[in-house]
Picture 1 (cartoon, rainbow, N blue to C red):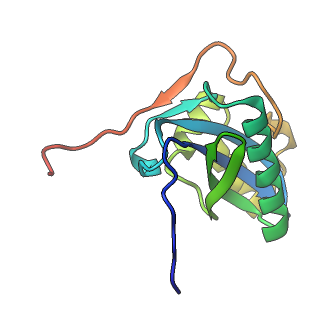
Picture 2 (spheres, helix red, strand yellow):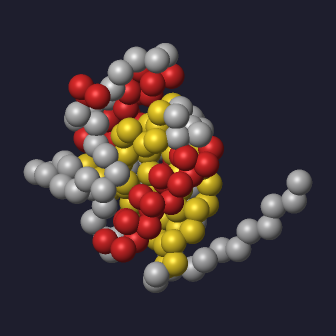
Length: 156
């Protein structure tokens, strides 16, 4: 296979960490990269909840996430990465696994996304977990979570 990509300057990268059951999203958290798009997601600084994306962009990210989960009939954790510039919102990639930001999202949102993913994959129920839903706003409400990369300079 050949991959051809195009760098989009001055664009924002937005991520969705989610858990789905039979193609329906049951837990969702949108977070944004502070840096412009182009920084690897593992090295990016993240805000949750997003601070600088428009309501339109967030809605598009949530709609696209729901469509991806449905079309791929996902059951379990997944991470989708989007790029936004102006009114354009594009999917960069979708990983059918828990991302490195799942622990950050769990701590910031106050609910264990890994537990939810494990339960849906093993046939358990998640209705009692108070999971954040697509379209839900204001969570967390009293603070903004920030994940910063930690580099081990002694290993470099």
